[in-house]
Image (cartoon, rainbow over all chains, first blue to last red):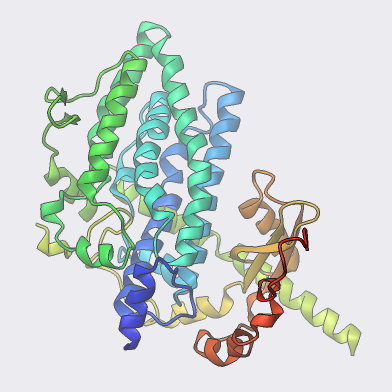
Length: 312
Length: 126
């Protein structure tokens, strides 16, 4: 067996690939890109929600939102740490984000206009993320799979708290019901786009399927998500903004309307409502945090030197 | 439209932007790398009586910061009661390529396993 065949054999036997194992360059590059962009999405994803920490309607909601946003930071860090095992440095990943080389999920380029958006993000955005992330717990690269297991354990709280926010609003005043429906209307279509282009338009998932980085196609996961949400929205007494949404008895699935892919590509290429704002916030945090990084490094160095002279 | 962005689009992989420079090209970046905090491996004991288990890594300027960051990143939900942090450069790992010669001597010693011995059924619980 050649070294490539040995590698593929391991994948087929469901033996995880670990950092020091031989792997094809393309596998390594694909993983670095996917994991780092996934990490960036978690970090940038803190921004739209962070917007509401100081505006949360009660102390309880504020504490919950703080914990959730802190979780997102944690998820980013698990993933950066997994990506680093493939030989890319943390600084290089940040650099790729700040210069626009690395992308992040287009969903985080939409604004959070009302408190109900925080509910919609938890229920719909995190719901879509869970749909994608659960299969990634079995992805073929060990450190990525282990990070995903940890992330998935924590996501369930995120989705439930989001749904609960909307549930409370849905039983509230007319104004509260209105912002609830409005948030669902604005987040629904961008959430469907989170699953990526239709299968016939993304012909290259084949390689990732063969390497078992990815386990289900975009459309399969999107359909599962629609089936789930179309039922849950009834509990809220709200509707999804899609006149074509209806149960198909023959397919035993929900049919749904056409996605505006032009919008997706537009947001992805930098022209979404908040792309500039998000990237500027990340760059500002990095630049203005420079003195902290330097000071901590200098302090550690001084301490190490002191300890050294004491020994000598 | 698709071709312009490459073809590999699926969850968590959004292709690459056309902008951006290779990270290692600039002088400033090299400087940053030199200033960056070292990498630490984190091990957590989930409860009394169990071993510390590797959970991941993080960056920190010194051991105290590594400990505090490990607490925040890896034990937000009571996952641990004890944390070890070790600077990654001090970990020496076996090479997977040596697996053959490293573990081969154990393969032909089946007599080390209890199932190697056939005992009559009357001998219970041994």
